[in-house]
Length: 252
Image (cartoon, rainbow, N blue to C red; front, side, top):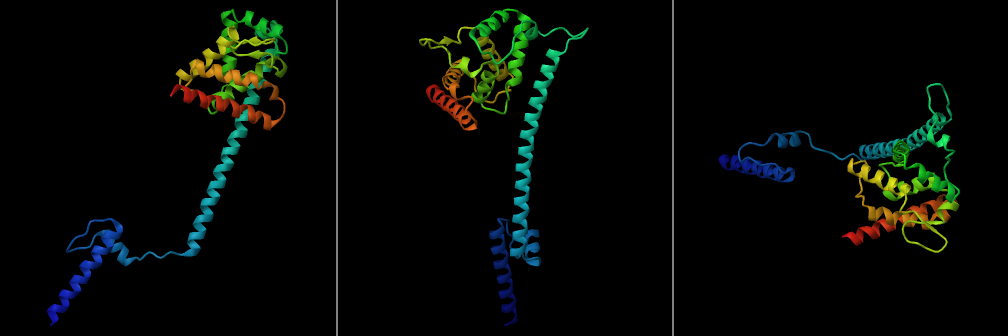
């Protein structure tokens, strides 16, 4: 009778090993338990509600910290943009023995433009290769690779066009009592900068002239809402995003 009892104990041991192996997705041995099984048998895991709450609260704090970091990065980016703008303005205003007068000051160019005459004057100046290169660099500074194309375009037009002038423009479609942006040297510069940025991978989205034309058209059409606060600004961006989505559907 004794041998039967030993056999029964061995069967129970095998069964226990098999159950643990199944629960841990580890291969089982008919004669010897695995290291994982030994650890589980010697150190059974118990769920402590208090420990669970501590971990949850800790994870919540981590999430809050990450959100604060993201917000601080946003503030830093705005500060850097302001610093860059102030630096550029300071360089323009600085006139010294070894500092040449900037072409914008020399030609009395100030943006945003308020009149069609100012716009036409810029287009004439852009025939100069050095001025054109510097102007395209200025456009490049405005573009933020972290923003969608529509928002970058909106920032560019708000920099160079006053609302009252922008409302008098369309992109390519001629309408009574309005001017068209294309063809113009300014239009060519904007398109070229976006294409260069896209080729260098600085803009994650796919950039085509067809897409840019649609977005520019939407921005100019909604330019009347530029100075009506954040709500309207968000509306303009959303409308240009919708144009972006429509373009994606057309190209698919």
